[in-house]
Length: 389
Image (cartoon, rainbow, N blue to C red; front, side, top):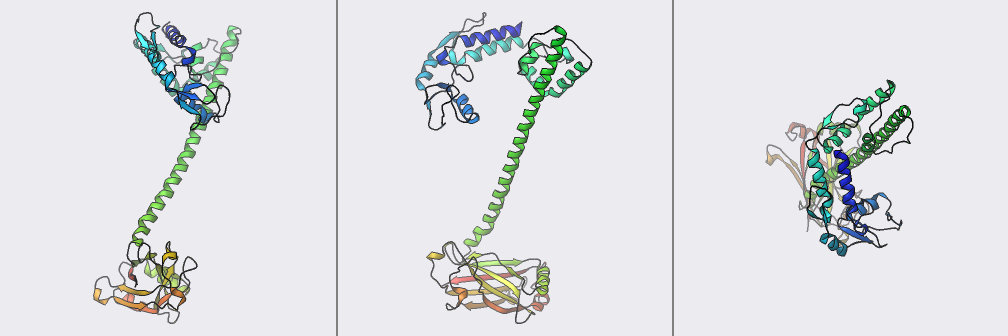
């Protein structure tokens, strides 16, 4: 009886709303009303969700609508609704309530009426004896015990139970009751229809879950790309503001030296660096000397930079190489050279990196690196400095 009265009050509250104040989508009082270019009024949230889900067509006349161009705030109707007052449809209440708050007001009466009453689970006819204290608890119970209720229904059919399934269970699961038949046939058909409805609901939930998994995978990929870009920026930006100085730590040196001895064409490049933020872009190349494989060759190469068109070519300046001694700085090997504008190596690069290098074909004896303490933790450190004059 309590639920029936509550439904009557809700219906009465809807009847108190004039049609021009009713949203055609949610069938309740307009909230933040919007007027469409085709002349219809809807709640702001309702029409936004509808247009996103229904290919942007008006639910009344299927007119094509744009959220940004065809929806306008209806302030006149908003003011009219704000001035409306209605008597509460609940007999025990004589309060005059604003129209926009009428439905919420009636809901409070229903919740108050139900809070001290026990509500049986709508599947009690098939074996669920759970008792609840409110409609909210009942809805939560129905959602959380979906598989349990399916098992009870399956059990009830296999055991040949003929009890009539409560119509409220049908309403709770959003399906229409079948046409009336004999009492014995009606129960079995109702259970089958309800199981079908619940199965369809499970499929929809699984589809939604799959879509969310795809979205999460896509977001993870985006986060991975952004993380990689961030790491590249953290690595490259300092080299743009280094004023032409690059400290190159060549790690795993013995492994790299071994690969160069096996393949004399094998070489290793330093990180790129610039003489200034808008300056010349360089990198260094380390390889075995082609003149004497007992030496390492160290060459510098120009690379294409962002501001090459604004620079003077060919490059004119001084380039220094230093093999840093980790414990005795005075033992470091340093060589300095001046650019030679007539060489191809100092002209504006036409590719990402100029194939012509310039430097020292016999920069350092490999044996000195191993015997004179230049190698520390299997790493050597080379400082390159390019200065434009």
